[in-house]
Length: 243
Image (cartoon, rainbow, N blue to C red; front, side, top):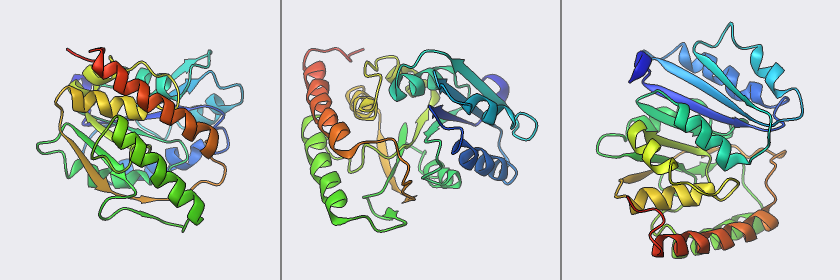
C-alpha cells in the first residue's frame, strides 16, 4: 500500500475532547511495541467543542497522525466511512474514541486475518466478555435486539455493534463505498454488504469496558436499529448493494 502502512486506525470523534486522550495515549504506547507501521486517522464530525485541540496535542508524540476536520455534523457512520476511504494501510481498523475495546486487542484480530477479509471484535462469542457486569435488563435488551438484527440483516453474527472492526483495505473500499446509512446503524449495513459481496467475516472475542458516559440511548437507538435492519433487508432484495 502507499507509504507501507500495515495498519490504519480510524477514530470517529464528536464531542470527545474529554475522552479521546484515552485511545490516543493507548495508541502511542501500542505503536512503540509493534514492528509494523501504523497511521492514525481522527475524523471530526463537526464537533462543536475542543476535540480538535485535544487531538492536535498529539502530533509530536503520535507518529503518522492525520486529522480530517469536517465542520458539518453528518453522523458516526458517515464519519467512519470518510476515514476508511482515506486509509492507506493494508488493514483498516475503526475503533471508538473512548478505547472501550483497548487498542492492543487489535492483535487478536490481526491474528485471524489469514483467509478472512473482515475480522470483528465480539463481546458475545467465545472469548468475549464484559469487563464489568451489566444490569440484566441491558444484557437481555441487547440480546433481544441482536436476535432481530441477525434475523433481518446479518445471520450468524453475534455482535454487530462492537465498535472494533478490522477490514482488508481493498474490501473496505468496496464495502464502504456502498454504505448508505450515516448514523448509528451503519455497522449492520456494512456487515450485511460484506456478506452480500462474498467477503469472509470472522468474529473474535474481546474484552469490552463499558463507558458510563456513552452517547448511545439504548431504547431510542435500539428501535432505530430494528427499523434500519429491516431497511437493509429491503435494500438487499432490491439489489442496491450488488456489484
